[in-house]
Length: 418
Image 1 (cartoon, rainbow, N blue to C red):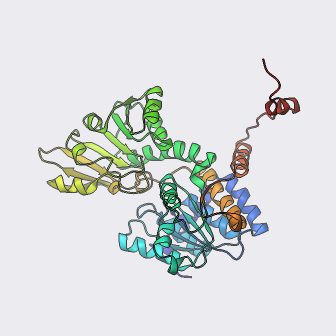
Image 2 (image 1 turned 135 degrees about the vertical axis):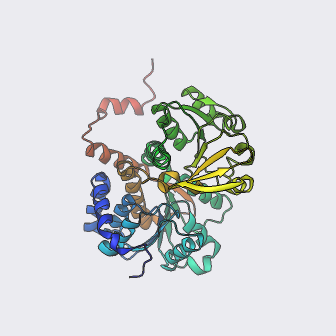
Image 3 (image 1 turned 90 degrees about the horizontal axis):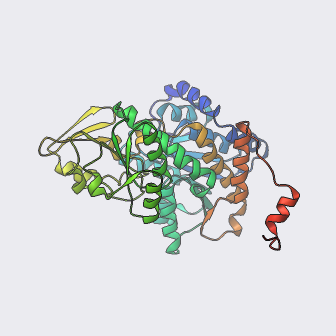
């Protein structure tokens, strides 16, 4: 089996981590057990471009149990857990092309290895696979029937393709499932981003000022976790409704140009480009810490930062010091890439259980329904979303009420008034 991983001798440690994560992923385990019996993906080639972590490992193991012929590549050069990649190859017979810290050339060679698999289904985190297919459809779209997309940034790219009437096959926006973005984006990103910052720097957040750029679901999570650790939180936004929500949630809101002079720690979670750039760097305090938790490394303008720096040096793992004119120092974490995966382990397995349950069930659904679908971006069907929520509650030992017959009648009637 072809593969490209750092070291197969790391497999034993990787398997232990995969098994540990599985203990916190009961919903996906139920899906894996059913897939093993029913083989809903039998005969289908599936190429997945995801963060190669122990949680992702449990997803691709479930997909293989369902009969899929899976190839896995990394969706970020810094997010791969090399021991997990080794175990997937050695212990589970899954073709993996991913090495932590790989350069751009290696990253794209791995991406094209996934495309050369000629997949029937794609599974993306950031839409890199789908974008590559659309750039060379004659070469790579021969077998592709449909796909799924994990994250906000990828969905934005796909909706752009759809709006231009250029999308070549139907794709399920897993990110839009309530059991994904309410929990993964808010609680997962919130905790794992703060975890990455603390692991990289070992700073005390209590008493510091944290600037959160963007108040979507990810920004909400980061802001609330930073506040919970005792930090003063400032939010920057371009959307008046989100800015108002941040104010009502108790956070200070101001333009980035003002926040730049106030912050001790900066986190970008917008999905946009050049959120922190030259004019902001020039206003920052000495020893300001700058990090990104958006999917691509474009939110912090590192090109500008390198141009204005008079000296750079690594000072800790995943921390680079930039000395600016006047001897002010700025610390960039994880090269401006995803700090939660670059400097830490990403989201906790418990929250990824729901996200990857959505991936698995959406792959099953779209593999059956693709003939009836248009070349559009689809939400995860509501019945899948609710079933995942029900299974998650059950796994946590939580029971809820049900509607009585009279309550159902009342909610469906218009005649009953005051």
